[in-house]
Image (tube, rainbow, N blue to C red; front, side, top):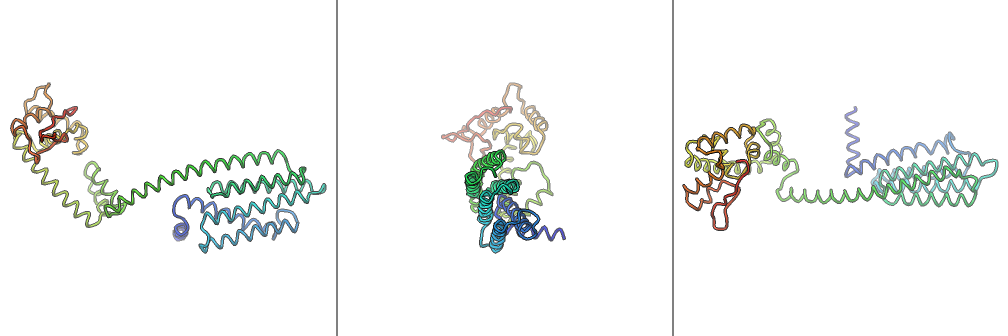
Length: 366
């Protein structure tokens, strides 16, 4: 039962929301909607709260009917979420402002204290209304609500200053202005973040479209290429995300790299027959100008293991402590193959200069 309810909620969110911001806005809207639809009848129908006054009840009925109509239009997808929230909150505030002015206009000495309490309640409702639209980042609504509230307070002061509780009005107005400023700053930041995310998504989509693959497939390829060590169970999960075309391409690339590495190992073995295959692999990577740490990451071995292999290479080649291994290897290859090292045997990151000769870059730590 819980699983079915959860699935229904996810389905409802998917129909009405496009991102996390919409989901947050929808949750605030639905909470607000339920409170208004269930709360207003407590005044005009059940007479639990509020004053027995025809006009005040009519205002509550107007708020309730507006909320019901907006909710129906939202559920029928005739109003999008931001507009539905706007047309719920702004009319609500209009009715609240009318109620405040009406209470001020109808105040008499006998009803002064009762009307003061009702004005305070309506000010609190105005405050909650502003907080709701600011949290949900509803466009334009906070500004309109704040302006309507301040205008209604001003009109009420002109009509009957005694019905307004000065300290409470000042405190409420102060916090409402502060929340409105928060809304302006937050909306600006959210808009900037949304633009950045939109640019990133467009770039991501263009990359995926370029390679004709999905996001999960691209992530799996990156993990396969950058992952250290062999974990067959992880490889199986990653490969499951790849298309058949991608798998065929990886096989072709793997075969090409395997043949290239074999040819390079054969060439190096011919030049240095005294070295083992693992030592020749380290020699190849040293010639690519890789540090011991980079070699350890590339081969999936520990740094100490690579250091030991490097020490064995130096011993077998008869190098003195002052000799730089990479410089010695390059010099040895040049002396055996001539001043121009064939492009097919180019094994190091340093590359060749414009004349095709080997560039003798020095690798730190080798």
